[in-house]
Amino acid sequence: MNVMDAIQKRWGCRKFSDEPLDKEDLGTILDAGRFAPSAGNLQDRSFIIIKDSKLKSDIAQASGNQTWMQTAPVLVVIVAENMKVGKFFGPRGDKIYSVQDTSFAAQNMLLAATDLGLGCSLVVGFNEEKLNQILKIEPPARPHAIIAFGKPLEQAKTSSKYPLEKFVYFEKHKNKIADMDVTFGDLKKAKEHIAVKTEEAKKKGISFIEKIKSLFKRKKQEPLGEDHFMEDKSVSNPEEVKHEKANIPRFLPKN
Ligand SMILES: Cc1cc2nc3c(=O)[nH]c(=O)nc-3n(C[C@H](O)[C@H](O)[C@H](O)COP(=O)(O)O)c2cc1C
Image (cartoon, rainbow, N blue to C red):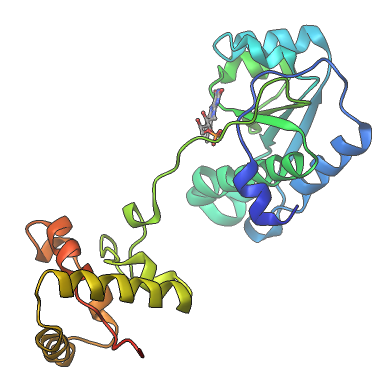
């Protein structure tokens, strides 16, 4: 499985078979966490492996009674040790870098488990005090995440994700990209797009030459490439402008 496959196939499994997890698989998952980036490479984090049924049940209760967690053969608790990261990087280290250090490790583990054909799910909704008591975690260490691993006993499902258009901006915050296909698509896709838009423009009776002329006029006023982008603030209805822009062929088709 390549990385993009694992990224796209990962899903939150919340029902596991009672088959134990292979030692080698668990080792691979932990190693994936070990290789995650960390601020200053301080690796100020640790992983606690939980297999004991009573402990799993206590942890599930401390996590708002998410009883499904008990069905997983293994839980791994990811702990921010907070011994070094705050000292090196100050308050941002304490508050932000430590969370990122554990989150990157968590994501690596989720992807490794997916690659191994295992189910996995993240739990961060837990009572920290209770979890500290159960696992004897002492400050400054803080548990940041629990991951349940095991063989899935439910169908893989993919949750819907927003399209890139909704949250990708160009060079400044909120500067939306008007046309993702043209901006990121390969040449073939871009050509197909142009052909479709040209056809649409023709059907609407818009003079192609007029459009090209206005396009070049506009290009002179704007920096290179700007015609692919628009700024939210400058328009009253961005959707309308996006639509309008999409109807203007941007390049002369070869045929
Ligand atoms: C910070 C954070 C906290 C989460 N806490 C829980 C949790 O307590 N219980 C749970 O079942 N899932 C939890 N999740 C998993 C999300 O619900 C899940 O990732 C989201 O619904 C998207 O589904 P997917 O993982 O299948 O793509 C958490 C995820 C994140 C990032």
